[in-house]
Length: 228
Image (cartoon, rainbow, N blue to C red; front, top):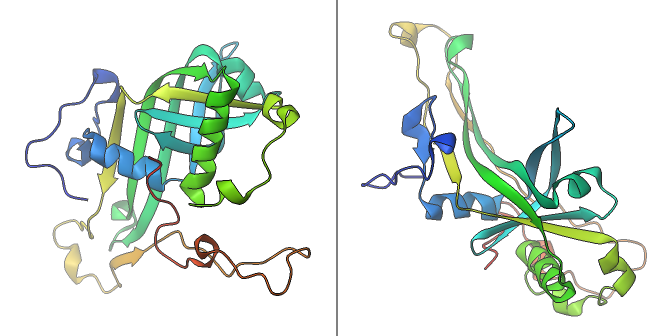
């Protein structure tokens, strides 16, 4: 991922990348692309002075980042009323093997978002957000599904936060050996890593004659696309 010729300044000092600042990215195009490719995010929050970090599915629609879960979830109950949260998403792109243990690294793309969580209160808005979630992973599937019941919607909470305060950090590079290590007799280089779909496994009630949808047959590369 190439850094813009005119770097975008960070939206706040809180999200400024300090360690390896050259890896910081603050433009929305980079941030959105990483969030759109991520399937899992981690929501950080505090309850009674105790920090928690909960993994959950995330998706972006426009200038908002969404996640959802059971209405009985401790995370959702603790954060739905405007509580401060930190949401992160990470994509592993490669294993970097150097000639010393100290210089080993990984190639990655990550995003950190700071802000306050807000609950989606209106049923129609929650339904639209859940549709965007399904379409984010499986384009064209929502219209073919059984509509959710009122009880299902009542049991599900959807939260969102603005993307006003976010930053990305990216490493997309090779081996950085210490001077003189280049001749050490051990293999060095990069092992690319990618999230890929495996062979679909239909459940027992799928008729033998029913073909797999295109979004199920996809192999390799990105599993998701833009949410909007």
